[in-house]
Image 1 (cartoon, rainbow, N blue to C red):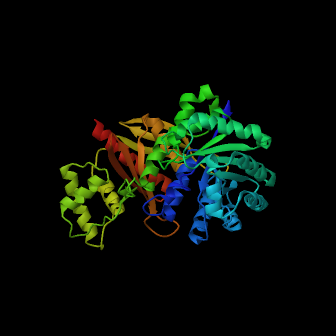
Image 2: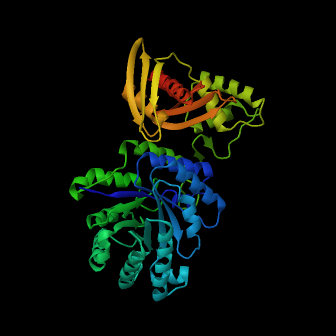
Amino acid sequence: MNTIKIIDMTLREPGKRTSQSLSFKEKLEVARSLDRIKLDVIELPAIGTAKADQLSNKTIASMVGTTLSAAVEVGCGTIEETWESIRSARHPQLNLLVPVSTVQMEYTCHKKAPAMLEVITEQVKLCRFFCENVEFSAVDATRAETDFLYEAVRTAIAAGADRVTLCDSAGIFLPGEFVDFVKGLKENVPEMENVELYVEVSDEMGMGIACAAAAIEAGANGVKCTAVPAGFPTLEQAATLVQKKGADLDIASTVKTTDLQRTIAQLSRILEPEDESGSPKRDFAPGEIAGVTLDAGDEIGEVIKVIRQMGYDLSEEDNAKVYEAFLRVASKKHFVGTRELDAIIASTAMQVPSSYRIKNYVINSGNVITATANVLLEKNGDEVRGVGVGDGPIDAAFDAIEQIIGHHYELDDFQIQTVTEGKDAMGSALVKLRADGKVYSGSGISTDIIGASIRAYISALNKIVYDEV
């Protein structure tokens, strides 16, 4: 069975389509979430000359274990800077984007076919000088002259490219045409035998995943996707393809499908892809609603409206308690944002008896081992134990709790911060779980941030259990 590669372009493509560009923190959150589901490659956008883009690349490179591929637009003159921004990654890769259709070559690069081959040789060799792994992406390949496309691919491979991507940028191919397209390349470019072949398919006609499946059946090694709809096949579609047709196509993937739904839900609230009118489909990102600030002059009705927009469904009594606590905070601050309101709700609303209590926990974690957690809880006087694994100590602890309760709740938001200074600083954690469409928040505090996170999770869990009785 062939293990196909699922390559994510969420940072490279949807980040350019949001109503506002992603913040530095949001880019890190997206990268961390994608890394957690064990994708084969995470692609980063071309950096241009922006120092902020270089900094975000460097930070992402230091924190993810997934292969990191940085895009380089042909002729932009930033190959060295791009390489410097990702060289610290565990598995760095450069992806040279080269237009190969006549119209795109002349419009973008002002080059005819013979001159373009010289550019390809020069640029691929320069990428190869810095980086061992170089990808050649043939942009608008499905509208290129076939003979020139074959020659361009041969030229790129000869110059050092070990990966080739065929891009149906205009989305003009049907699945059957993609089969012939891929087979034609393999038959006419024997050098492809030792090179990985990927496809990047526009979903212009709503057939992106079908074309990707056809390309894989014809011999492609991987497909490029995005976490949220952005004009390409999505991660969920690719995972479903492997799940439903893996046996028929003799393919498998390494993506952690158990975490995929939760990750996509989290990312959907960050990325805000635009609709056809150019307006964002969502009004708020995780933990905050765009443009909302409250102050001491706001009536209880306005505060309740924001609480409901945040996903909470509180009783009349809890709404009154939250508003009272809100006024105490607002009297000391110029405004109260939704993150402060989250903390107020977690510590004020739905204070319920504790069905689960923490007895003890043991965490094993390090940079050379998989994090594990052994958690012992008490439920109605009985001790129950769970063992979990994860991509970090907190992820492992939450997994252990899920083993105990026998249920997975969507982690809607998770925040940690220090509340005191010094070596023995107290850490505060906020956990928001979603159950049956409702959001339940819990808070925890401890000198151990892992302990604070566990306490916050249990606090939210107890509210769910109480509500379900």
